[in-house]
Length: 207
Image (tube, rainbow, N blue to C red; front, top):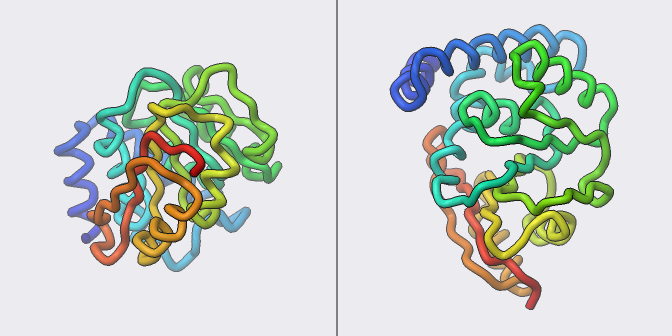
C-alpha cells in the first residue's frame, strides 16, 4: 500500500475531515520523533501505510463491540489509540507507563481537540482498575498474546472484543494461548501487511 493509497483508503472510509485530523496527527508524530523514539525513523516516509492505516483498520473490526470505552494498552506513540479516537466518537483510554510518552499522549490529545474523550493513564496495565469494563481492548507490539490477556483480564468481561495486531506470529500465538484461555479466537489478515495477522478474540476466560 502506497502513501497515496493509504490516504485514499482513509478518505473513502472515514471522510475528509477525519483524514485532515490524521494528517495533523502525522505532523505531531513526525515533530516529536526528533525528540524521542516514538516510531522508527525509517518508517517516517511511510507513516500513513505503516502506522495510521495499520491502526485505523482496527476500527471496522470493532463493529460488533458494545457501548463503552476502547482501552489501548501500551499506547506509546498513540498507535492505535489516538488514531481510534480520531476516527470514532467512543471514549478512549490510553494506558502507558513511560512518563515521557504519557506527556506526549496528553499533549497530542489536547492539540487535536480530543482531550474530552481521551483519558491517559500513566501506569502499567496491571495497576489500572477501571470502574466499567472495556468494550474493546487493543495493543500493538506489547506482549505475547497469553501474557497480554492475563495482564488485562481485570479490565474486561465476556463481551469485550480484543483487537491485537500480532504480525507474522498471530496464528502461533493463538495456538499457544488456547492452552490457557478459552473463547473465540480469529486471525484477520492485515490490509497493510498481508503476511501479518490481527487477533480478534471475544468471550475470553481461563481454562
